[in-house]
Image 1 (cartoon, chains in turn orange, purple):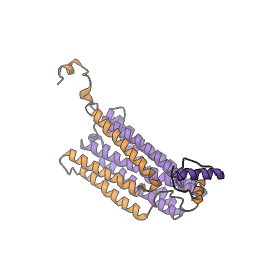
Image 2 (cartoon, rainbow over the protein chains, first blue to last red):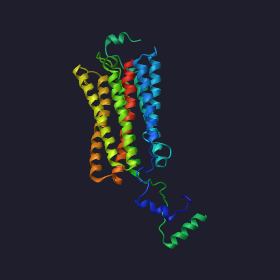
Image 3 (tube, helix red, strand yellow):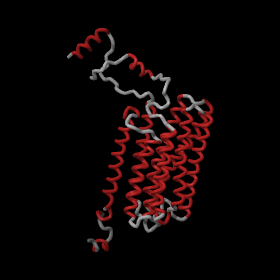
Image 4 (cartoon, rainbow over the protein chains, first blue to last red):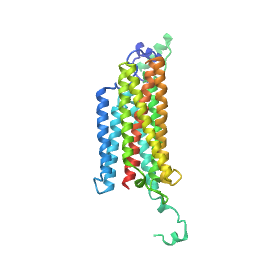
Length: 136
Length: 210
C-alpha cells in the first residue's frame, strides 16, 4: 500500500479527456535538430561499412565483419534515440523496460541458436558408411 | 498503524477505498501498446535472423551470397529507406506545427521512397529467381528470401497504411486521432529502418565477405 495521498486532480486525469500537449503522449518532442543529427550520423555509419566491404579495405574478413557489426549496433542506437525518440523517460520508463526485455530475448535467441547449431554437422550421426569409416 | 486508522476513518465516511492503486496512467496508452507490438515484431525478425544465421552457409552446391549480391543495388536501397526515414521525420515536424499541406507533401515523398525501395527489392528478387537462385534452391536462399521479403512485406503494408492515413488527413484534417495514428506509423516506419540496418549488415555485407 503506497502512502502517498491521492489528490482529486490526479484522480480526474484517468477520465481520458486531455486537451493540451496531447499528440506526443509521453514521447519526447521531435525537433529538426534531432532528425538532422540522426540522419547525418546514419549516413556516416552506413557509408563506412559499405566502403569497408566494397573497397576491401582490410585483408581479414573476420575483422571487417566485427567492425561492421559494431557500426550496425551504433547505428541502431542512433535510430532509436533520434528517430524513435526513445529515452528512459518516455512512457514513464515502460518503453525502455520493454526494449531492454526484448534485447535480452533477442540476444539469447540469436547467440543461443548460433551456438547450438554451429557444430550441427559434427554432432549429427554419419549418414553413410563411407562417412562412418572416415570419422575422426 | 496510522495508515490503518486513516483507512478506517475514510471507510466510515463512505468513500470507496481501493487497495490496488494504479501507479501509472499514460496520457496516450496507444503509443505504449504500439511500442509493445513493435517489440514483438522485433522478436519475429530476430527468429528469422537466427534462422538465416544458422542456414546462411548451407548453399547445397548452389550460388553463395558473395556470387549473388550486388552491393551497389543494396546501397541504393539503403539510401532510399534512410531518406524515407528523414522525410517522415520532416512530416512529423510539420504535423507538430499543424501545417497539413506541407505534411502531406513530406508523407507523399516518404511513400514514393518506400515504393522505390520495394520496387528495387522486387526487381532484385526477380533477377535472382530468373538466374535459378530462387527460394527453393538452397537453405541459404530459403532463409534469405524469408527474412528479406518479410521486411519488404512490412514496408509494403507501411505504404498502404501511409496512403490510408493521407486520405484520412485530407478528409478529416489533423484531428487528435489522426495525429496519434501518424505517430504510430512513424514508429513503425523508423522501426523498419532499424531492421534494415540488421539486414544490410548481417545478410548483404557479411554475406559478401565470406
